[in-house]
Length: 265
Image (tube, rainbow, N blue to C red; front, side, top):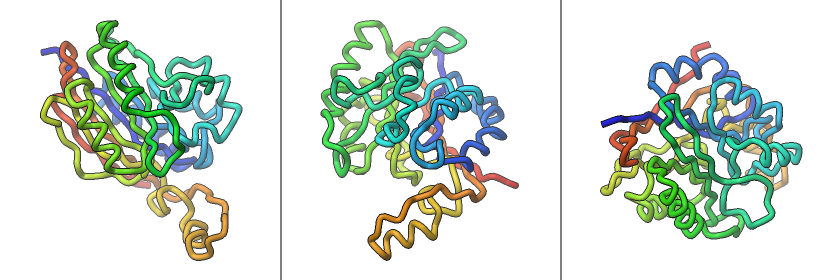
C-alpha cells in the first residue's frame, strides 16, 4: 500500500503564529514525513485577513496550499492573488462572482494528486450557498478526473454542522478537518467508511490570548458590549495541527494524529 501524509496546520494567528512557523515548520515537516502541507491562513495578517506579502511569506516557509474562511475578505489587496494563485483558496460555496476558487489539486513529490477543498459553514455565519451540495458536486467532478485523495478544510462555527458534514461525506473523501473556532478538539477519529475527521484543528498563535486576540481587549468587549477593536496578542505561541495518513490508491485514511507543540523561548 502506497501511503501519503497530509500535514494540516490550524488557523495561523498574527505575528506570533507566523514567527513560530518560521522556526518550526521545516522540522515538523521532516518529523511527520509530510508529503503535502496545508495551513489555514485567513488570520495570519495582524489577526484578521491575509495580505499578498504574508501569503508569499507562508508559501516561502513551506506551505503547499493555503486555505481560509470568512476573514479572507478583510483585506481587499488579496483579491487579485486569489484569482492568480492556484494554491490559495477561499471557501468554494460563496456565490458566483466571488474572487478566487475553492479547490486545487496539488501533486506531491511522488506525483500523487491530492485535492484540497475549502468550504464554509452557514450556522451562525453568513448564509452563503450550501456546503453539502457544493461538496457533492465537487467530489463528483474530482472523481471523474480520477482524484481519490480529497482533503477538506471546513471553516465553520457549529460543532454539529461539522460533524454532520463529516458523516455525510464519510467514505467519499480522505479527511475533513474543521477550522474557525481556534480551540483544538479531542475527537480525532477514523469514521466507519474510512474518512479521517476532527471537529477543529485548533490554532497556531499566541497562548496568552482569547482565541488569538489580546486578552484585555477581548474581555472589555464582552463586559462592555461595545465594538472594542480586536487585536492579535503578541505572546509566545503554540502550534496545533493534525497529520493524516492515507492510502494513495483508494483515498481512504488509515491514521489521524493530533499535534500540539508550544514555543520554548
